[in-house]
Amino acid sequence: MVMRDLLVRGMLAGLLAAMLAIGFAYVVGEPQINNAIAFEDRLHADSGTALEPEVVRRTVQSTVGLATGVGVLGIAFGGVFAVAFALGNRRLGTLGTRGTALTVALAGFTALYLVPFLKYPANPPSAGEADTIARRTVLYFGMLLISVVATAGAVILQRWLAARASNWNAAIIAGVVFLLIVTAALVLMPGINEVPAEFPAVMLWRFRVASLGMQLVLWVSMGLIFGVLTERATRSLAHGPAGSLRAGAR
Amino acid sequence: MAHAIAVSFPESSSIPIRDILPWAALVGVLAVILVYFAGVEQGALSLLSNQYVHEFVHEARHLAGFPCH
Figure (cartoon, rainbow over the protein chains, first blue to last red):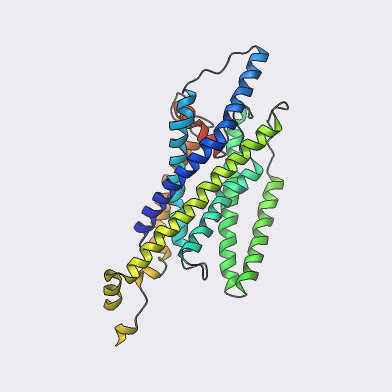
């Protein structure tokens, strides 16, 4: 496999996984967004303030808009995933192609979504204040950076230790170091709590579960689809005429 | 005889790090741009003066967990 093969498969897997995530988001996430917007409209009606103008129609937002946004994220994540897979492939011990793909996908989910989410969870419309967006964005991406560095560091530490101790013990030590760094960041980073007191707790919980579910569907299916595509290509290269020719030429 | 026992396929070895790095740099930059437009544009930063990008990808932005209004 050369880099080109992996990138093509990564972006394709990302796009296919995004389609599944779009379906999940439409069925599970959209009702929660609609509830939050209804809540927002009720607040405006009660206080007598004007409703926010609708720049893009809701029917467009919830279909083409949702699909475009998640599709773009899927392709971008797929590209990053392919590079991470190339770095990890046959460098993570005895994991096969598909095992490596799933491991890298779970690491991507943890680093790029789960850890930042634990500190600054996804909020539905109307649960944030517009004038703090700059601060919230900086903090969110700061947490994401810490999370990516901690994940990459833990993987490198695990491989370094695995050459000296057993694979299991290396993984436990690297995992503990990862959790210590992440926990320290979760405790030390400033908190954000802008959800209005009257915002229904159940609605907030359901929205956040929908967000977590969409990202999980995206990453896990990307890893599984990429694994199937790449393993098949590796096998046909190794056993096909081109593979034997190249092996004979060596 | 030597080539008969050489069974290491080029496909089955890992790609050297130095061959991955240029791709990693390019993909990293492109991914940042894509994620920026899907997740941040017309929020904390705004390159375009209206609200269309923000409102168009609004649902994905909230559900993917990016900070929004």
